[in-house]
Image (cartoon, rainbow, N blue to C red; front, side, top):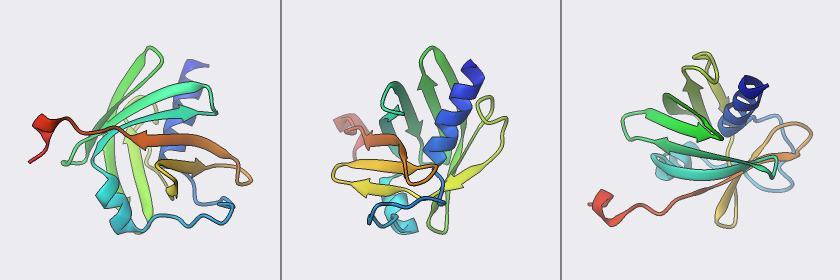
Length: 128
């Protein structure tokens, strides 16, 4: 059950492009690249917290409940792709990212938003 939740969380973070975005347009590849790297806090299905830190070298780490994992991220076309060692068994999941105000939304089935996330403010020591 724990692994299923983590797989769903990561698959959702990767987002899918099979959704009706309710009039929102997906971010372009360059917009996703401007958003990533960074640290993100999100909510899966409105109730489970997840945090992800994506580095400029394509590596990332994540925490959900008491579990943590590491993986890689990339942008392919208009899609964000992620892969985690344990949570996704190194399988790559790609999908579109939508912006809704100051948050970002991932859609999974039938246009239902499953993940909402926001970029955390970078600390002054990490800025040039």
